[in-house]
Length: 318
Length: 318
Image (tube, rainbow over all chains, first blue to last red; front, top):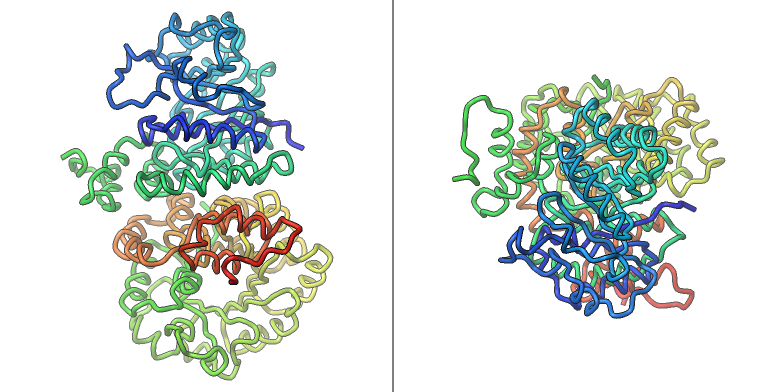
């Protein structure tokens, strides 16, 4: 049986779809379901500082204040809680000691260029008593020598888990296998994690490839809910890792909560996200395109923005 | 650059979604697009016998009569044409000599138990001058010793390509790799092909895994259109095989033809198909479930049909 742990990020990465406007009932119900399914961690949001990112338009799971958490989950069960912080968007002083928090793990997301600040943050969070995790984003756009230097700087940091993050959903399984092996060699005393995006329908395939290569922390979201093409679907991942998990509570939450939500807002396999994945680009232009009915299915035009030598303004930018 | 050839099966496998009711313009336009993209083969339908399967409700691409083909494609270009025949649903006498047909390749679909009849058919089709292909369906439900015996019977058959067909979409990449290697060892003088279904979002991952392991005929469908969860999407496959193909004509056909079609009928990632894939079952029960608004999203109930020891009639069977 696999020793890997699953982190369901539906609220955190799915929050990028609905600006973290999940109801307390939705989050509580998801927690109960993940716990019943036997999933090790639930990432319940970002712990960004309201003063830094601005509260307007952002639901409460962007900030994860302690009283929201205790109100939502009055009795914590087996499933542990994690939150994410972005370098530049949170303040360490706002984060209580682990002893005074419902949160078990804090995951620091940074770009390769921000590794020094991330290390500093992890040292403080570790001192405060949290399990810690470092998510180096957009690894597909970091060249090998830079990645090596970045991982070297992590070697003496007290972080527990270091993640391979395919932010653009542009990596194939071979690259995932190679990266997993490289991370393991560079960081033999850390756990390695995988966070995949589904632009090319490879999020699940890449996640199980990483697991086979030695990743022991696996991110997923229920029904794949996450920014743009979304993530590795929890229901597929725990199906693969049978008999460790119970899939029924997850099917129930899809049927009752995710299907109605998907009717109101979109994520998943949509061609502009495929194109941005194939191009190894951030999905922001594809997301902008999808916002307007008149441009959302103009795939050829969208593709040509990347490939034509003539300068054509993006339809969505008009 | 990969030496693999792509067979786009949109009309044939996608026909299982709309009963082969594509207009002549749709099929002609698809042929032009695939040809522009540089795709080697287009599977234009089944060549079943109208007297055997019945014409009612079935569009013309279930029968692929010669005058339909010449009317649709008056000038054949680089993309070759294939059709599929099912054991028990066609008559060899109806099939003209290759010399008198627009068709280049005939693919014989059979279950492992029908291998003798399939061999007989292939011998005749080979004599008639066609390239031939053998698609042994539902390989995930054939045990290893039976598969070995079946492939032994193919060794002296003049067939050009033998396919691994994951009809239920229930195989993981490791199994695909193992099967590809096994087929290659059993049939060193044949080409090996892969036909994947997308129940677990692995059709593309399995297809490129098979290609890496030595499969040289790769099936796909535009926007994944095919029965139930559909197939490996052509746009992903040719993106992976760059720079051999031009993706733009395929994006155009998705934008103009597949998106409107998908609004009228469904295929793709839907949870009942995921469940049937995980269970290694034919999708027929899942397809029946999806026909009724009151049952189509009853995932837990559907799952329990397979797992509960109490006898509960399938909702869809009521």
